[in-house]
Length: 173
Image 1 (tube, helix red, strand yellow):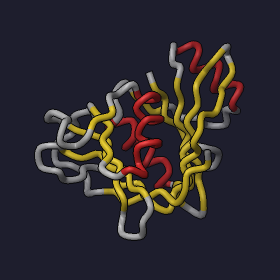
Image 2: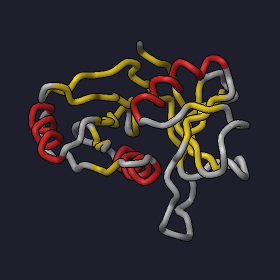
Image 3: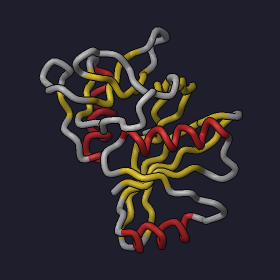
């Protein structure tokens, strides 16, 4: 299982990104943090049998970074890279409430493969080229118009993004 939570004092868009990530990622759920510190989060994850955590931190009014963490020996350990965000776009709410979960991580540019390998390992999803992935949904990593990376769940049949688009400013390895 993967828990998705916010940092301290989240904005509305930070909370929305947490909900969207929990909706699209397989075996993920949203964890309301409240005033819990990292030690209390580790205890709650251990009690729930969850070993992985995504923390969406606030920056300048919206989501600013994504921290990937793993629970090892009742301690939360940060994983590289920290994903520094330039921005997030949300699509209009879908007409149907059920959303198929992501089945693959896909990347179509060479610069995206290191991040794709980390995300593939963290989410326990296969990393595939877009042309080799079967039907379903994928967390697709591509380049945007400014040369940065973009992460978005896409429908592999239509190639259209669904839900949200995360624009990456930089990766802190």
